[in-house]
Image (cartoon, rainbow, N blue to C red; front, top):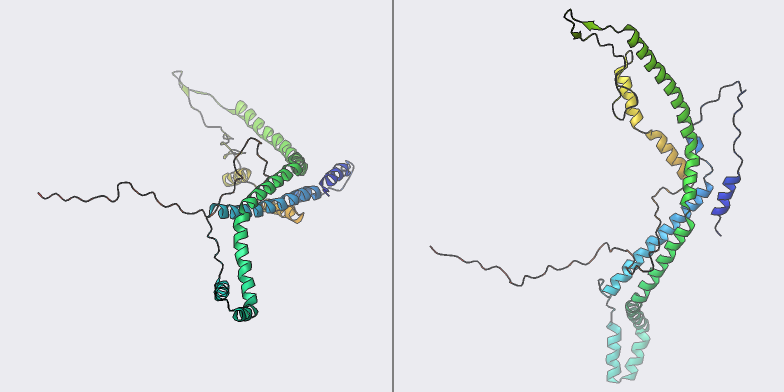
Length: 309
């Protein structure tokens, strides 16, 4: 029974946590981002089911490759031993019933083993085409189950739910940053407008005055300019470097939280059934295809001609 729809419904119906009261006097500690990664049962169940089908799909592909090798004659057929069968045939040809009966009594198990090996070798070759067909149908059915039961819309909604608290904290911090940035730029503009002097020569030529720049222009991809008067240059560069990167420690913590909730660590695949008009075989590349012999030249080896001068 598929319990994923029930888990998804339970998540939608679960009560949201109450917003903190504005009248609370004690400041609360800032939440850790990993605390937002919770209520993952439905998501984990869906991805675990997909992981199981991925494993089934790969096993079926491996079996399909092996069956195709038999059909194509790429694997040498096992040669059963016929030591005891041949010896018995000789006794039958001689017509010595007493020796034949004694031989059957002494080597009955050996004869049975040889017969089973011969039947297995013959059966493998006879069943290979039907096995290929059955495996292709099983793989097609498995792909249909994957596309039917995996709800990427639900996965995306879960991603948004887990991401939204972090985005909200970023927005609040960005609002504070914008206010501080606006203040700094306004102060610089007002000071430059009120205190900058204009220089001329006595001949009326415009002269360059003292550089009153307090803030340089940010470089592409940087959050802050590399020069802000009164601030440490190295500290600004460190902030820009951190702005362009993500937090490796936090990434590992969130990844571990997902794994602890039962979400598979490996990359999962969703296979789709091809169109009815697509007659191509199921893609299952053989990792060890037979080597092709180089085509022989129709002219044979080159002839060396020596010219005496």
